Length: 320
Image 1 (cartoon, rainbow, N blue to C red):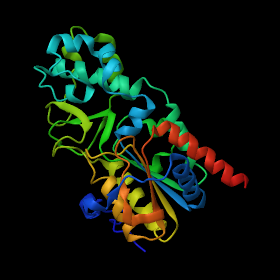
Image 2: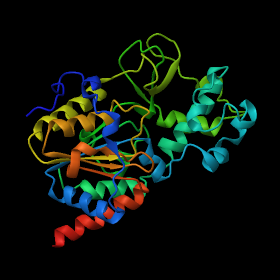
Image 3: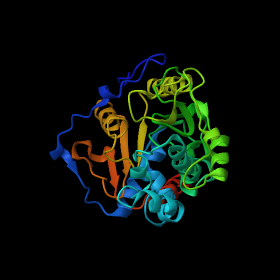
């Protein structure tokens, strides 16, 4: 059966996935942690395929924290220059109205370097790959730090819907193309002085000559380029191919910042297909629809610990 997605050559309309589940149906499950791990491992062991949905909570659990000491250690000069009221963490700092393009890229090049360019594959992402690599799998993620690629997932199995810290685009989206900026950001970080990059490093749109911006979905000008549409098509094809099989939706660190992309769609897909189940790992928001019964496991524990314990459970099931 089809699971309510566009064909491979069409846009994916995430609004069609709105869950419609009443709030009163959500529950924090009462089962002990060990029992939840056992149930999650059983679901994964019996699955024909795994669909991963990953949000910011996964990268935070992996070590890419946007606030606290990691922020103050790397952005002290920005906090001093612009004020702690505005520079509270890397997320809020991104909304600061930088006075010049030199200042804007001074901040964003460091942000991208620390979260996309400098880190190698993080152990938690590698553990997720090890958990699912032996089964057909696909990744739908709002994260823009490129960690799934670094961990070993194939490009054709990843749909990063919200962009990439390693790319830039025309600020007004005058043409449908993105540009690799990894080398540029690395060079900028070597040249930053007083929180600014030299004027000659400020990128300009090669088509309209206007300002460039990070390739992040923050307004109506976000560029959905050829690769974005290819990834959307791969996602639709995966859902089509395994629509009648036993699929586990493994949701990792997805909150309510953009719930219509992963959290609500996953719930809707489980409601529509009795062969599909949901494993939701979320430190603070692990509640699941009670009506899903045994087809949902919501684990409110550190994601790294949960993935490790689930992996151990899957391995034990294989031995048995």
